Length: 430
Image 1 (cartoon, helix red, strand yellow):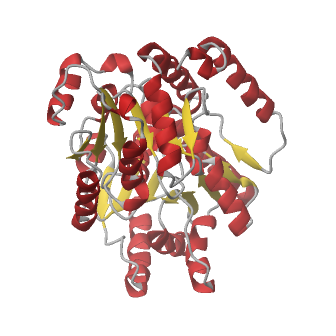
Image 2 (spheres, rainbow, N blue to C red):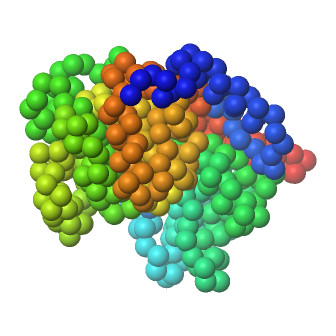
Image 3 (tube, rainbow, N blue to C red):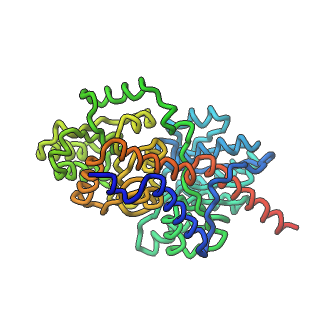
């Protein structure tokens, strides 16, 4: 397939993308979208911020919690996180932030009520000025504690919660009860606005950010890339590697990707390997299902299930094409953003927050969600490009993401929300 498939040269493609963004920026909206290019942090000296999250394991919300704690400390504030703990606690404490252990993942009403009292005491003990909740069950405890102590309350809506019953809608609604509600994508903000009626400056879109110190092509040594490929048991000198990172759960689309590989033309597939990298987290039945599908489709030499990969920057550099074919909408799409930052073309399912990250046929491809045939077409299209053409897509993605989805932008925007809440409360008290 020639470069005509892209329609225009790489430079013209970027100019067209920028023009489109300028046009969109001029349209009226009913809510606020943070300016992710602003990186100055407001002064938070003498301020204590308490973030609430069920646990500090791996995940987008958890990493964002650490990123915001880091910024609070840099801005002169005191950063505290309450959770049940997890693998990221040492990293949090290494930043100079504090961790308080509470049983915050429980949905038991008695535990939620008990936690409200414990959080109220923690707020009073630490002189907390603002509570930032990131999940529903602990958010109820945090809301009641904040109201009891007269403390500012902010929430981040990290995804669209299902539930049609009246009780479930009330349960979900706590995430829309903040003095300000932060949405992690425009797609999530649409959901909050449509479901809860939150509009105006109470609803702010702050996309998750990429740490460009970590996810930069020049930051990864060849030794790290070689070690990663060796761990994946990729022995050929230069196979084309397709990487699907994410925990092994059905909605992340691993089964769709396996079936898609079987449908890719053999002349293109013969030099390609699909790597499924992620924790099973106890879903052994699902892993067995994937392995059976690989065997039944005769893809034993074309698909690898490699488990958790710690060095994700090296994993992206060890790949040529990255897949994110989630069958349910991703609220943001961290894989798409990180892979783009590493200069890799990405194929995503065409729904959710990923649509805001990947520009179709400019930085990657968007395909029909849950469709192996559509994904196979996309994979075949990128495999048919020569390496320079794929690099052109990846470079366009790298520029796009660096301009719009930075960790520093997320930090500055979140702390600006805190500052705005403080200023409004002080104004009301005059």
